[in-house]
Length: 621
Image (cartoon, rainbow, N blue to C red):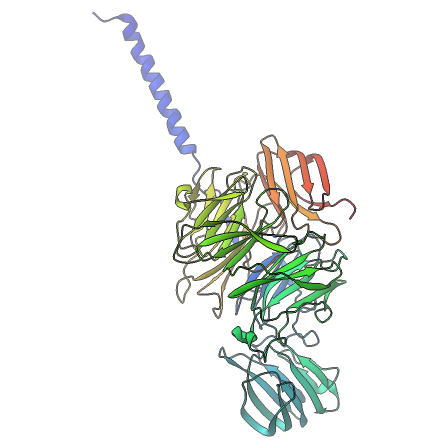
């Protein structure tokens, strides 16, 4: 005979089991798919010069609180795109005084020939992607005569029509070409290192306005002048003369390695451009900068000697970096160089105290260097997990949300995560965190959805979303192979270009570092389910207006979050992206914000609303 109680239990058990299954099914259906909410819109990137691209970066170059985009393109025309805070840009490269020869903007555009229809003497250079570059003398409707002095060991007149050209040496080692040209003349000259200065002296025409220079046929104002194409690499945006306006240091190349030849030493200079009411003035001659034999690559800006003024560490290809110590008034002296030859360098605050450590990738090892009492000291080292190829990029971010900066070293042969544990870097296999083990050419940490967890974007693998512990591939932003082969080089950065709190994508990729062109990718972040956010621009005191070494921490109901000035600088060779970003998730109020500067300055704010860009000024500025 059935037990009535047992008989009554069975339907109840079925109902409980059915309810449990429904709950489990609902949970599974509600589980977030990695990157499901991620959304990005392609923007027009035609203004960003990808031909001969060397560097792509971000800075607030004009101090208006809006992020701008810049490129460096060796001796070719580059770009400075002023942002309007809405995702739009205006190229202000020329009007900002950034042309290598400021009197003749457009001379650096070697991919266009001038319109020579008007009467005049035309002087211009072009590119043929070979060791020696062409320089041209042409006349239309008039005769012309004069001389050009080149500082080159390899110079030849390839063709001359309706003109006579005579070459002769000059005392300082250059070569002078005297020309006498009839109307309709064309002289083609090939020059090694055309980016070096060319001294021009014109006898006729007597009117300098009939002398037209470069692709834009800019008329001269005098008959004697110098033309220069500079091999520009890393930009360093900062205030170097203490007037609180952003200036610019430019690291230049080393003539394909020939700068070590005594003939060329001292002829190629790094550049210092000081901001004068929104336009740059060349202050190199009086700056004290001495390039020596450095084949310049990156510009790293910080107060290395702790005197309150910004200094510059210029990294050099296949040689130790060189240190320029600033005096805060636009002057520099050469300081002791760190005795290390690395493939990539990054300045990181490993201890949350505003003290910067130089991390240098040397072979399969990361070395940690500190500058103190005019001496560089090796404070530690850690081997990467990749023994076949040295790291090419170092990305910084607090990926485990423990309040200090961790690193990701990437290389085609293998990647390494370096967890920061009390100022000591501990290596960890990226695969254990869900990140790719190898094949990464560039990377950046970014909280793309502002949920409070740092995600990772890698070229070519794409976007990986973090849940605070591990990463999962979203299959969003996958970087497709190039039409002419596989990707061999990349740059990726995540600025907020429209000030809506969602960080946007700016990237470049090509076959190699010196490829003829790079593919530029500019995408607006349109992710719908994005959390609350805060962005902070720290305005530092005179001498350190960019607040290098500064930190910001914010506390919400979920606890503290930490940010460092410069942690979002993911361009390969430049310094300029100093904004500090916070994803706050569901929290729309900030209970407390603390900003600190290396000189001890401190600002505390309480009960702040989120979802805005804040500019916080140092005490006494």
